[in-house]
Structure formats: C-alpha cells, structure tokens
Image 1 (tube, rainbow, N blue to C red):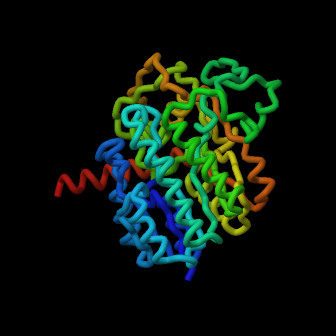
Image 2: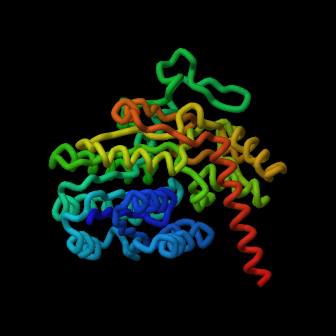
Image 3: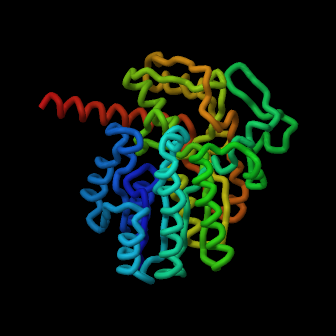
Length: 362
C-alpha cells in the first residue's frame, strides 16, 4: 500500500492532486477543514468540492483537521507510518490583505503548519517525497525594481533584459524587499522545506507558483485573480482592478499542469529543490487583457472599475521562467493555454450558476 497525504485537499491544487494521485493508484488521504470559507466567506467555501471527491472517489479518505494541530497530525502520520510515500502540502492562507488583518493565524497556517508536517514526515516516513506549494511572493516586491516599460495594455520588461524572453528565474534574491505578511509567512515555510531537504537529506521541493488557476478554483475578491475575474464577467458581478492602471502582468498555469509537475518530481525526487513554476510568457496577461478575454468568453462587457490603490507588495510584472524544472524533468509539458483556461473557468461558472438556479426553483 502506497499512501499520499494531501493538505488543502478540497482547494484548487489539492483537489487536482487528489484526483491525479488516485488515478495513479495511490491511496490518498486528504486534509482540509474549509478554512477558506473563514478567510473569504461562504462563496469561497470548498465544502462542495470535498463532497464531490468523497462521492466520486470511493478509495479517497477525507480528514477534517487543522494542520496547526500537531497532535491530530501526529496521530494521522503515526497511523500510516512508512506507507506514506508522498506528502503534497497545498494548504495555505493565500491573501496579502487577509494576512494583515490576522498575522498570527496567517503565520500559524503557513509557517507553523508547514513545520508540523515536515517534522512528522521526518519522524514517521523519512523516505517520503515532500512537495510544497510555495509562491512567487517569496521574492517580495523585488520584481517591481526591474526595468519595466509601460505599453498600451500592459507593463513589459525591457527587451534587452535577460529575463525578457523567458521570465524570472530562481536566482532572484528574496532578501531586502517588501513581502507583505503573507509573503513573509510563505518565505518561512519555503525556507523550512529547503532546510529539511538540505540538512536532513529529505526529498523536498518548493514550487514557487505564479497564478495557479483552473475551473476548480473558488475564486474570491481577495484571492484567485483569474477565476474571480471570469466569474464576475459571466455573472455580471462588479469587478475592481487594484492599481497600476490594470496593466500589471501575471502568468497563469492550470492546476492540472502544476500537478503533473508534482508527479514528475515524485518519480525522480531531489533534496531541497526549488522551482519557479507558472504558465510562462505564452500564458501571461495583464488585467486589462484578461478582462478582454473574459468578455469574449462571457459574450458581454464586464462591469469593472479601477482603483488607483494597488495592494501592498503586489507585483507589477511577473512571468515565471520554468526552464530549470524543464531541464530536470524534460518529459513535462504545459497542456493548457490561456484561452482554454478562461473558457474552462467560464463553463464551470455557468454550470454552477445553472445548478444553483435549479435548486432555488425546486
């Protein structure tokens, strides 16, 4: 019996991981207590996703627990012991703004929760692979110091810069920059994952994601840029662009492509690996460009407005250079382009709206 532990199992990345791993024949135990509903309100709840996983995957076991609770985590790891071959840690408090409201909870979830999982992996299943869903926010606002050029619909990195063609690589410093409290808690977790790999020889990886997205994302105003934007476009909910005249750039990676990268690492793991991971230049867009694409998919104009105030520590331009991962794992390929991602999100929003309308009618 080969067991995988997946935290944040009902969220975007966690649920995609659960489905992928069960399809590969692993026994999957998912941990999720729907803190996303606490963070962002009932509309962002992952409860429906949890119920679908339980209903559709008979071999899946769900555990309603908090990763900050060391004793409950210890009981779980002790129960499976060395049968655990893989830990995918996708649970997080993911919002800059929310972290500033409650720094202790943010740090507890992102940093202490990660330490709990690493230490229990070391104690009970030291040969297991440990994969951490980190973030490009560990670089703080340092990307904003790059030589950017303002174009009609986006900011762009100066063409002569070595990162222009492929994006930002892992050599960018994470030091001496403004991170936001969320970014700081993720830095702490990221460093812990690296250190357990290097100091204890554990097989760990930090995947520093750009915009992780897909139809399974319960996008909310404070988190989930592309999913929330498309949801607003399809449903007509007003959308606010925060700062930079809407020209800030993100690269977007579908959760299925990210999880396939996890699988590639699981099959040939390393100790203390760090990878920038994202959609690359081909799947990048500014907020203005995303609005145009979402309007095409929705078949109508969006109801949006511009706030001059940007979020603290927010990136003006981010494109992930994924060549380090591609060199180490040449079989990995992204299958989802930006248009396909937006179309899938739009279709899911319509499906859920139709289901809700049917329930109300009944």
